[in-house]
Image (cartoon, rainbow, N blue to C red; front, side, top):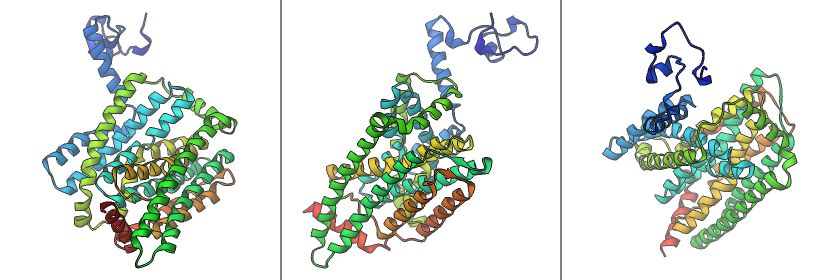
Length: 436
């Protein structure tokens, strides 16, 4: 009987000419090596087969060649420009593999644990890069990376979804209640940045800077705890008490999964892959962050631009592709969930966590961003709320979001790191406070 995974035979090659792996690849009736009864043949072949399936799951994995190159470049001390570029491209496929492994685990853990897994590892790359930067005292990189991740999701990713889906479909509809809930949470997150900036401007005086810095630090720590509680309540709201609001999204997701192939990795194998990829991301992120100072000096690019524009492209590459693909299939609820949901995770989970982590390790990470950055964030959330409140989208709305993102990127390209000297004085004052 023909093995179902062998496919249909080609040509009239005799059976004795098809042996071993070559025979399987040519469409033999014999079982593949990973189904061999001999353990010494079965398990190595099974391992190789799963590795191949994992690597073939996404075309971006071809960039994995940059992973060893980036690590070698950082280890032997190549030029900072080479180290930055190589590790920049190395993290892109690693982010895709992180997303792949997380999906493989979460689908087998059920809705609740799966949601928590996606919430934890959905923005793992941004979290790892930010932790490395925070450990090195690069507060500006951490803040701009967090803000950049949010902006890239609610403007760039959502704009690409509306544009790509609108070109293929005249008009698209999505669950307005879910989108409104997410956008309301984002409005709360924007308020959590506006309040510290406003308080700092109110309290600042020439002879009491240290006291002002201390007040902002206390406010940031308290606000971070509250934002984390709000995010946990949102997860409980979504998965337990108000699941009916998200039924349409869940049904669409299940429908989309039915069209996909069966999952490749077992939970244990996906867990091992998750750990290994996370370690590689951490190593590449270490070299990437260490090379930023030299890049700033040699390429005349501000740290703010690197954190706001370049690093989010790396961390969100896999999510960008996923969101655009599902929007072209007219699955806008999934696209909204990826774009706005990811932004909400950054604003209500990752950023507060980094503030708390900085509190623990003695780094003055606060929620006080530069005034210009705070205004940009608020305006971006406002525009997003206006465009999604009717529960419909088209290509023109996508073009609006993309146009605004490009304008913001250009603004931060010409925005020097020392433009907000007040923010620089604040960080210096808080550092002195920690030292005393």
